[in-house]
Image 1 (cartoon, rainbow, N blue to C red):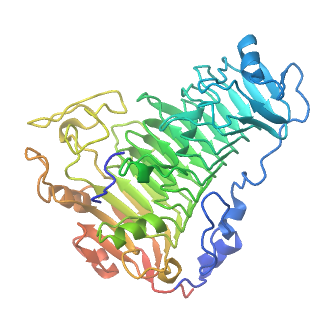
Image 2: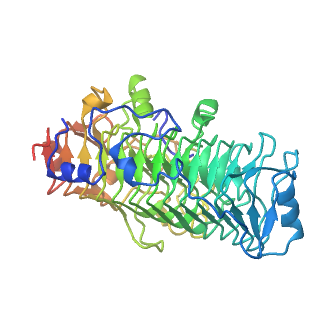
Image 3: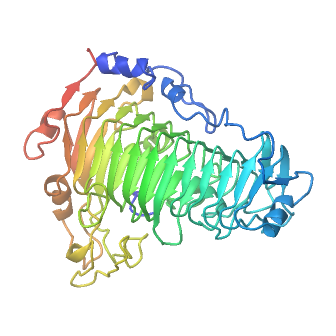
Length: 511
């Protein structure tokens, strides 16, 4: 967890009607989100990855050449994996499969092993085993299997516990486990799977600081995770949500339904680069739909972002916090041409944001820089590209930070999005209607070269952060420079900010 700041009348216009008819948005005033872990009822959800309710069935008979695993024999799966050569296919019969009753008992796949579940095949940890599948075996595949009831510790995972490379997880349900349901290695593919009701994360993409490249997360339902409510147990830990990404260099996150997670839906935190987050439905998460933090270069495009941040946004407002907590939150993240990626900016385009607690916030903490005591998550600034540096007096660092020593919120291009807000749906009267670009007044440490308003001036006016050609429906307000500057649309478009050229603003969508 880094700098997430913790001290920190919809009417049917033509586009809205088209989206509604296509199953892309829900009518306001309908039922509130159902409890965490249960499917929501919006129209949008009907056209996305509803894989938890009806998982794709596996083969009813053993494939030719496969090894059959018997649920009546405790530990049969682990034992047959040990005794078989690499590249073996294992077919798990219908029934509840168990490991030996030892917390460290687990399956250790060899390179190229494949695990196929018959309809009704479940690997159950019985709240005894910590891990289901571990080890360093590469190019392992899991398909059509349910994995549940494991008790991994905080920040550890049940499936692919050791973040081995090249795993493929398809049509698999990973549910009701402690810790993370799934870890990630390089070139991992997670498709058509259900990650729900896990104690901490649905998936934790982390490999001990080594970059994870070529990650694909496609067509999954990621729902109701963080059942153990880790932010309550460890306030400020930043260790919760549907999926957490750390040092991932190249990821495609598309076509997923990420909903009803306790906390953030998708959270990329620290030295991530080259993300494409496209065609997802991010819905009814307690916190932000998406956080992109101390990371670089991303395309966030054509997503439906619906009714997020109601719980956390309201909580901070009720305690008197003036920070514009938003449903898409960029913190010390921006486009960086010095790092190779498919884009050299952060582009947020073609999305529909409907009835979320606020919109998009671009934030840069003036006191957070390389080797600053305020930089709690990145140590001495070992960077994605393999360089490292320490900012001292004077400030010096290596690429890509160079002499600035900062993670900058810069080169963010926000365009052709539709922002719809009906405050009666949120039951909100104040501070749920914000779009923001801002920083704090630099004060810390006393030797910081970034004291005063210089970072606020830079993020607001000098770092190529630009809104344009968007559509706003509802009572939107805008925050620039610092939390005290709340603007109307005219002030937002006028000098010195000159934001949202070509955009339209309507109190109601009159068509």
